[in-house]
Image 1 (cartoon, protein in one colour):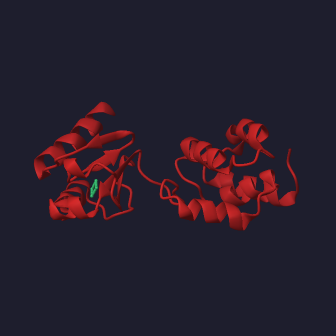
Image 2 (cartoon, rainbow, N blue to C red):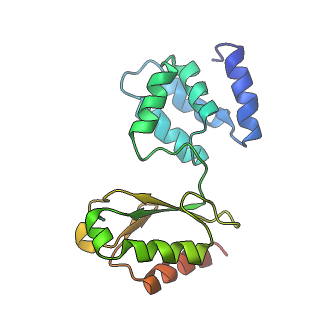
Amino acid sequence: MEKCNCTKRQTEKLKELNIDVGLLRPCLEKYTGVSGSLITVLQTAQDLYGYLPADLLLYISAMTGIPPAKVYGVVTFYTQFRTEPVGKHHILLCQGTACHVNGAAGIEETLREYLGVNEGEITADGMFTYSNVACLGCCSLSPVMMIGDKTYGTLTKESTVAILKQLAAKEV
Ligand code: FES
């Protein structure tokens, strides 16, 4: 299914990032040529590798025949897609209006202090990254953060630290 030397070069570069494109092949084989399937391919790739580096986007473009500009366009349009690596637990901290009014800034300060990182950085143990995001759609629970598919609401500094401790303890 390799199409040209470009994909070989990308495969080599991706190996250096510990990205094995072989894992994505079944998905590419299933969806190449299927209209409207780009988002599914990108979601599968992100689930496999945690993020979508530029060389992976070029590889997907080459393998599917979808122009790079279109692939980049979709990735930059949807906030669910990431082009930078993140920690094992990616915290999405809502900075929408209701959360802002109810103390999201204080929760961010707690995350920054407790984790020792700024937004977008990965903790030294590779466990956590936090990102500020727009409204998560559950304003009545503000302030809110999401980690994986779980929503945590009515956050206080104490409950935020307790949640982080709980997640870290599960990894031991
Ligand atoms: S403003 Fe935070 S969930 Fe809506």
